Length: 330
Image (cartoon, rainbow, N blue to C red; front, side, top):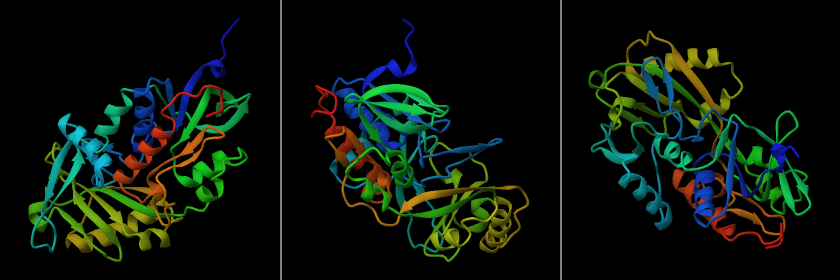
């Protein structure tokens, strides 16, 4: 008999391949369970993302790896020992002293690329439905195609997408997931001035237009070029949320030229993170429905940092650390 894709059975299926997803998958796999991950993107990382444009490279998602708490710190220290993370000290605009932070090296997505390489991940694979079959779940992809059957499922994607996927499954925490709102952020990527010429490598604060502006060359392991990334403020991004990319590019070009006090001649790439920062986090590490065998996790459960994503992924993985004996029965 020919085996169909949906006939593959795993202990845990994970929807997503960002930090929370990979941490949760690692916990389950380390406990001896079979795990498969599915992500609609071309590669791992979520907001730990790096984009290339010719010879330039831009960390256009999270600026740094912010963690607090013993467990997330242990994960960060592991990445540091493995050479996946380096210390970033940048000359700050208007600051009396520089602040040290941690970043992936040579790119922000290096730690998650490493973690994904240890897992069975299918990229370019959008999960559109979870359908119960007996006491298991069939994970369905686009084109009405079954991807696999799983005893339990961990959903580690932005809350609005998770709510859509889980609608109709009976997930007991669905309303809490659906209630999470996000603040957007527009990001500009461009070739700007030499940092020495403008007197700073990073600018952060409560500017009405910009949340942060960073010279990529100031980060460890990056090329010594003139690549810059500017994150627009939440208020500015919200006001221009549905503007066309070319409109956003023109507006941010004007603002950046004012910031640097010089013209920017090259192209400016823009990217909209619609689900950038959780405006009202759940306040719980992970949402687990043991009766159905479904857990939800992500930075939005606790806040908006990489450390929050790590803590949430750990909680989801630990909730399903033991193998299911009989489908949903826990």
